[in-house]
Amino acid sequence: MRIAIAGFQHESHSFAPFPADLDSFRSPGGFPPLTRGEDVFAAIAGTRLPIAGAAELLRDAGAEVVPIVYAMAMPSAPLTRDAYETITGWIVEDAARAGPLQGLYLDLHGAMMAEHESDGEGALLRRLRERLGNVPIAASLDLHANVTPAMADRADVLTAYRTYPHIDMKETGARAAALLLRRIAQHRPWARTHRAIDFLIPITAQCTLVPPMRDLYGLRDRIETETGALELSLTLGFPYCDFAGCGPAVTAYAESPEVAQEAAERLAAAFISRRAEMRQAILSPEEAVAHCLAHASCDGPPIILADTQDNPGGGGHGDTTGLLQALVAGGVAGAVVGVLNDAEAARAAHEAGIGATLDLALGGRSDGAPLAARFRVLALGSGRFTCEGPMTRGTRAELGPMALLETDGVQVAVASRKMQAYDRAMFRHLGLTPERTPVLALKSSVHFRADFQPIAKEVLVVAAPGPVVADPASLPFRNLRAGLALRP
Image (tube, rainbow, N blue to C red; front, side, top):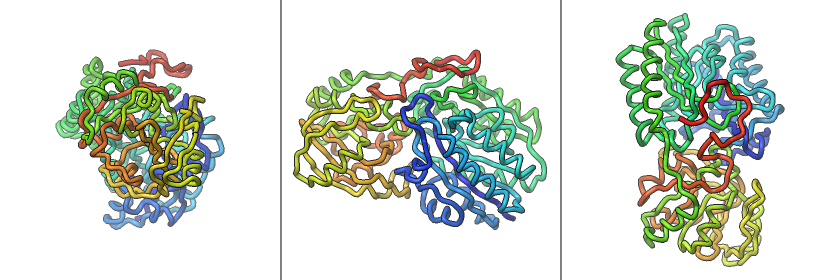
């Protein structure tokens, strides 16, 4: 049995400052670079990526696994036409040439847009269907996917992560591969129901560690078991995609249309009934600073500040300085901010050396608001390290030259490429001990919780400047479907 595998991952933010070009996929920082053919196996080895889980399960089942492409870029504005067409062309043409195939597994995000394709995954699946005909296709998706009817209609089965932070990526890829094998053995498609939910949910309210999402994903498990559905996916949507398919959805698969519809409608009804709970307290930078001054402990455990609106994992550039400036102005000595994306500052620190002082305009490339100050170089790093936390364990980071800088008692971990702060290894690489830090200001919305929440004294979500706005209703949408509410 020959089964092809491919990965094409991008979370697109319609209002972010910079698009994803081919170089964004060639150097994605914390993930494997753009890879084709047999080299895909080496790129994904030892990681917790969905495609790694799928490849392992398929091999264990005795399938001949044919690697096509792995492509992932950090979230940003939508893909350039060239990037989308190049990578899509490789996947479609290489899969067509790899035949005869009994199946195709895809590691997708579900919220990919391009300059000319608002539904990136739907268009990819359409082109694959045109070339491969009825070859069974299974795809794993991110929990933040905007699942459209075009995606549901063109894939045999879609299955999404069930955790945020995404600690089940590899398991989801394996589940998609197992469903693909089951579909191949059955020789006919399953019944399917796709149900869109007509309101957007802020990213910070999508965390599955706390109610209501923790309860709703537990209910998902029970409904799937009670109804006998083969797969029941609840996707929460990425609320920064300005197109008609944006928003949460429920997608169910079963042997009969009646079972698929019952499972989808039960979960959708329960989800809608909890909509009033889908909010979270957000602090201003000044409020967060005042709280830290009153409650931080010198040797930790740290108060964690989530700099949610500059989250590189949601389309931020990882370089705004609003929260950093508030910590400096407030005199929060011992606070650490990271990871800030500024290749020029990192290069200057390496040229100057440890112990040197530098006058820098740090960060602010994306919004024109850097922090101009005198910094001391405390530590330097290559930016090469292996993640150790529960979400990305085994992933080899390549962030370029890194530096730990200090001004007025506040330290900043600086990298040459953006990466969301979801692993303590990013700070250990520069000699820091996160567990003993009074305050950690992390450029992340929720993913940091997987590795940092266990060491936190408390977690505060802060709305400092950045494009990943805490309230998506404030964005200038133009292309959403009629009737879609911008808040729960």
